[in-house]
Length: 266
Image (cartoon, rainbow, N blue to C red):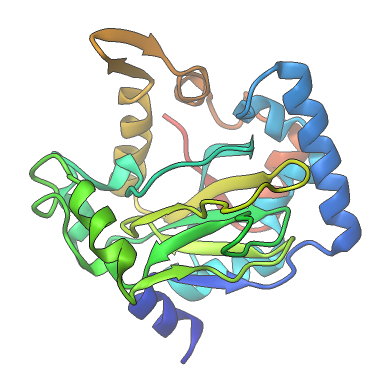
């Protein structure tokens, strides 16, 4: 099965050893340092892009080649690049691809790839990566973008079925998954010694309509209301303010242009 066939069937593919062992240790150190100094579990995009060793990861030739196999030659990189420390999320579809107003993600020409690079091995005992519901990008949990999604039932049914997979990723592997794929952090059953880090970014086809919709969704979600209290999510607010190329490092802009990748911004 070719990578694009596997992606169409399962909803994900793995690019092995995008970072070697030394690069993994260096990336872990950089993430630990940046996140500790910021006192947060999630890195701001500006902080991520200010570190050449991190900013260059989404533009590596092996990563871009793998994504081009899935989306075609004309790629867009979205500026929602971040690193996270010890973050665990329950079963979900990323909010830009589910719920009212997301009918377009079911159109035949839609293409979006979420990317996660994990800096430790993943296994069913200690975690370190994600679990997925194989093929769930072909299932609708939201009336094909017309109703609010409900993940409680899938979490109780699909997550105990043979479709659930703990994705086999080793430290330095890159996981590429379809935006509509149902996934969750691999929940550890025993303590993990040390800290867990993941680096995240995303790609789309060079399509102004889809690109604008995705960026507008980020802008809309910068304010969230929980329990009647509204608050601003700093990273999403920052992404909404970024303008390309003015707000990006010259080296990153040159590398993106050299790779033939357009960077989307509002």
